[in-house]
Structure formats: structure tokens, C-alpha cells
Length: 329
View 1: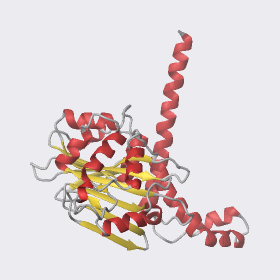
View 2: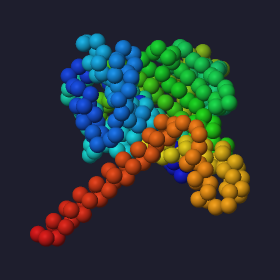
View 3: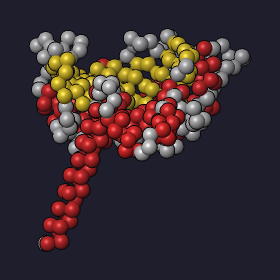
View 4: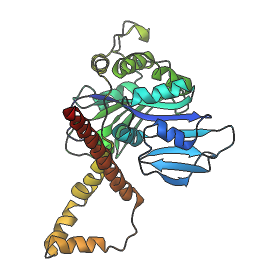
């Protein structure tokens, strides 16, 4: 994510659906991504083939009853938002899914807290103490080098809530606050969420409250459901309820990771080599002649960057064409 983002945001962070009525090319066209450089590769989960671009997969050639399966990861969602030709992006793709009676298998919606509403240690403590009201009994708190992660709801359930330190997961050590709340929904629950006729923030807040509510313990009352909602959870719900859909450029995710690796992790080594080589050109020549095999993920970053530039240039050309036509009239 762009490190300059300081407001709290709500984003779609995973979408997968199946269709028995469309070819892979028709699904790609419905996504508004026919202009992107798709590659052919091996499918998964019973599908023999897959078309792939920017963390978006369209699987096909499975059993006759399997149809076509489209899957967009979090990164794929960002690339879809950035590159689709659909004027209304998510609204249009959900209209396509609903209008064709397609089956949504998974939908993730995420809230990113950048302003300090959630203290991940407090959340972890409340999960472990079960200071929350939920229809979901399964819970887990994990601690690792990637930070603290809390989950309410089992991996097999139709709905689960995951809260974790996103800054730590990304490896940021600059003191930034970034806690993510993910609502993962499958099958019917995903379908129901996609049809809620309100802004994504209001929908997210309402569904989240329906499945999870952190509370303040009251020793005088044995009925947890009557305990008062924890202030931090009330603040989160109040904040997220005001948020409309937010989209992020897909390139920021890929390029941010690449930049973080090159500058923050390998920066000292690169700086030393720049001082050793007589000119920058000599250093570039040495890099170009490296013996390691090209990494496809870096090739993809370059392809996405060029595709994004071309798409933007085309939009500019169309705009100026319209302006010129109007002036002639």
C-alpha cells in the first residue's frame, strides 16, 4: 500500500466466482481487462488451464460441470481497480455476476486503520480472554516475526474475522500504525454481502457487528450479551460506517514491495557497489549482465507498469479527441 495513505479505508480484498455460461475470454471481457497481457499457465483445483495477469486467475478446462473459475487476490483486486475499463468498477462486476446468476465462492472486505483506533495488543488480550460476543466459537491468537494476528471464526466457516498488524506483516519498522480488520465471507454469505444496498463502509460495519462485538466485562452481570461494547470497537464501527468504497492503484502494492526490498533491505549493498564502480553506467551494465535467471514476478511488475501507462495514455488521447471535436463544432 502507498505509505503516504493516512486515512482509514475500506477495500474489497478478495473475489472469486464461478460461471457455467461464459468462456475465459468472456469473463476477462466482463472484468474490463481484455487489453491486459494475459499469459497461459497451468490451472488448479481440477482445472487444467489458467489465464493469468496481475494476481488475477481465470481457470478453465475442468470437468464439464465446473465451468470457469475466476479468482482475484488482494493484489488482483488492486490491479482490477487500476486497469479495468469498467466505468463503475465493482458495481459493474457485481451487476454482471448477479445478472448472470453466477456463484460467488469468496468475498473479502478489509478495513485499514491508519489512525490508531485499534491497539492490536488490546484486541489480542480481549480475544484470549473471550471478552467478545459472537456466534462463532473458534478463535486463535498467533504471534510471530510478522506481528500479532487474531482470528474469530474457523477457516472452514462461512464467515470469519481476522485482525492483525499489517505494518509488521509487511515488514515496516518506521513506527507507522496499520492494523487491518478482514471480513472473509464464502458462498451464500458472500452473495448476500454483495447485494447489500448501501455504501461498503455501512455494510461492513453492520455485518461486522452482527458477527463480532468486543465488550467490557461487568462482574455484576453474568450475561455477556448485556455487557457494554468496548469503546475501541464502538469507535471503529462508527468510523467505518462513514467510509465509502476506496480504491488503490495496483502498482503501489507491487512497486512498494519492490522498492522496499531494493532501497530498505538491499540499499546499503547497492550504495557500496555504486561507490566501487567508476560510473553509474558501469554499475547498470554489471546488473544487466548478471548470471541469475530472470524472475517472472519482476517481469510482471514491468508489464503491469507499461500496461498502466498505455491505458492512461489512451484515456488522455480519448479525452483530447473529444475536446478537439467539441471545439470544431
